[in-house]
Image (cartoon, rainbow over the protein chains, first blue to last red):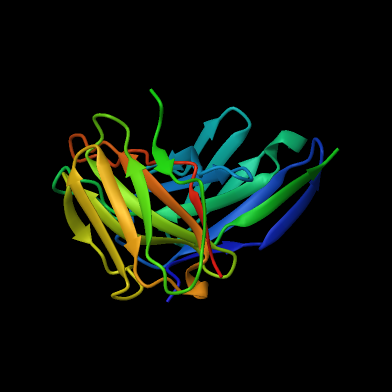
Length: 116
Length: 116
């Protein structure tokens, strides 16, 4: 059972365009939704994250939109650049009530290619 | 800070051999996660520790896999005996739990394991 599903599986965008990656989750207990970015030969790194008390969060060219009723969230990359070419993972986590970390459930990842 | 350190970076071994992967988390972090990444299955959580104690090992594929964290600055993931289907990139990540909030996981560079 895949609890976090990403779409599309791959994406090609022209430089300057908008990249949109979608993620759907099943577990209504999830309350933390990060996006991770991974370059070839490197480990994933946190890009941006959101909690369900807000519907949108923006950091520079990156925006997360969150729809709690639909159990979906998406990553928008404005003015996409060739340097944004990477694999993007959405993830989700339930709340931590003990002060210890809860585990992240990752989507399978999508490969974004930004053409010059 | 040196970040999460993993060794070796690459490992090539023959089926049936024992493999030990090593991880040094970021100093001060109290949670450690082991992941496996393949094209087919994406990024899978194998096991995670809080304060050196294993919390969830439900992702460990079978008894051939074992993980230890003898102290706050070191963890190992062992595969014995190894099989070709274990070929993957193995990531270690660490995080610092604080006040019940979810905190960013910092990934190491990974160990690429090839089992012939």
